[in-house]
Length: 175
Image (cartoon, rainbow, N blue to C red; front, side, top):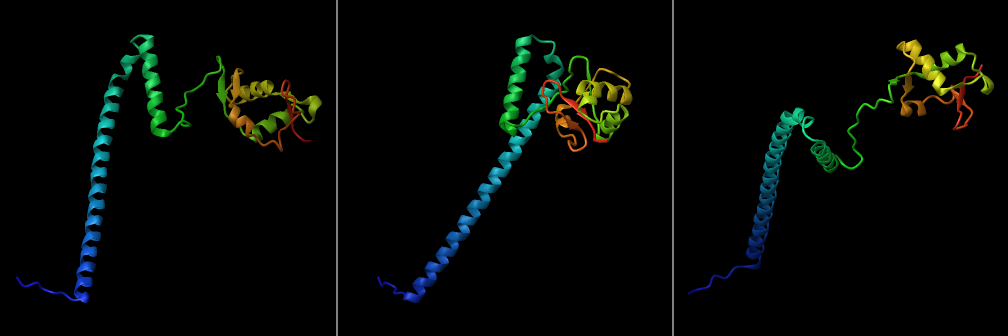
């Protein structure tokens, strides 16, 4: 048995080729893992969509069942939404304040109402309820209206001035 001797140069070249082959194998393994993850994601996506479709088909029957069951369904839906979209995500519903209707407004409309009522300082200022009444009568011909609180807090406070009294806030415009 004759042993074949290799030179240092040849050994280094073999080591480089082996390293390249190892790198190629690692890249192929990463690609295979990514493909497996993609296929699992597609399968789970289909499963989720099919489950949601089944739930949607049965949704109209939920209201006919008992109250505890309805509460349990709502609770589980909230948990799913929080897990999927985070704790700050909210599915909002239309909130009806008594029998009042929420109305939109623009700063210009409110300024026009205040000017028409000569609300030009604190002594002649109007309450928010009065503004809602006047604007509702003008826009949708209803007196039992409210402004959306978020929109009202974002009004242009340089044009619509207030007295800062939280209990009896009055609003007016400059002359």
